[in-house]
Image (tube, rainbow, N blue to C red; front, side, top):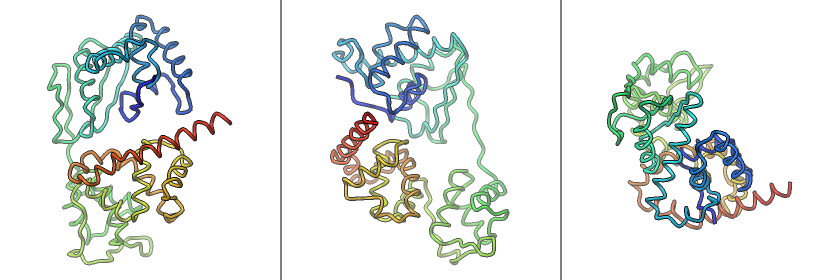
Length: 327
């Protein structure tokens, strides 16, 4: 029996892209792609069962499933590293892992192992993370750290103006923007969107004007706060749709979400047409940030782990697969 899917891990995403695995591919197609590619590369045959395992198909070797979990994880990481190093022997490789401040433990453990193998390999590993995150692998002689400066006031205003589609950001709001954005591009962009969503900014004759007094403005001070504020404005049904979408994953067919929502009596029709794209767009944000946010919201965390939600996703995904097979 194949292991449970772990497609939310960056490692799995990279492997699927590397082998050209599509969402519609079944186990036979995935096995064929992996075996053909790894045998063509050479010197990787002992690692094939572990790559198959991590891609959630039968490993082809019953011993893999019977292994103790820690030992199997070590073999899996070794297989992925061997694949990277063999690929780098054939041509230079660039691996990019973004937002390590949201990294899962398994990926961090894998990167720690991989970095120890990079000194002589033709691999450029690019890692991005916010200040405050400390990589567990420490520093290496072949490592270069680049710290990006925060945006200046002028740069922050230019960015906010582009979000609004105007050349000049409203003068009376500059102080509120600067105090909340703190020169962080993501903050500047999201705070501007929040001001629009809250009706604090209103478009008048091609520019924006302040609709409330500055002392009445209360914008969230953290990324989690910004996301939560956006979700609150979607209403209860909107938040439930986002919940379902984030359980599915970063990418999914709209009809799959519609099927799950219908089974849950949370149909998309109950969410205003203008809010539907925002619901779906917020799902990726919510999926990435919920780990940090849920630590402060234990009751909500239990809902995210609800077996019922995941069961609905599983049943609907299976129905989609059967429909695809008929077509």
